[in-house]
Length: 104
Image 1 (cartoon, rainbow, N blue to C red):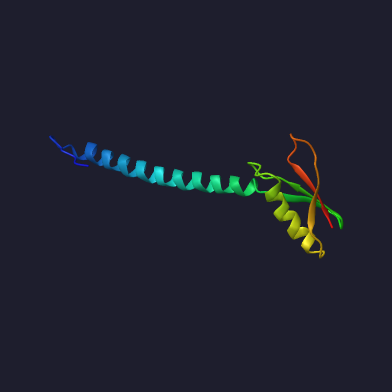
Image 2: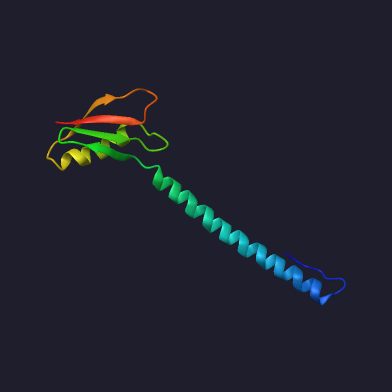
């Protein structure tokens, strides 16, 4: 970027420089804040186990729902703690984000 000054006014030039620096700093800060918010949003949208009994595991799907396969990974890990493996018992309904697994 090339800046050509035809007539110099110290205070006007100084205010332009301050505004440009402020604008760059503000933009950098906003990018960092938005990136942090996006990452927090992703963490809040991960699949999670909502209920676990010795024979049953209920998994709430993440956003976006990646299907029963992603939930199965969590259910397998939970059932493995008991020395069992997970099997799909029921998908509550097409509009639900919950998957029910049975430890066998």
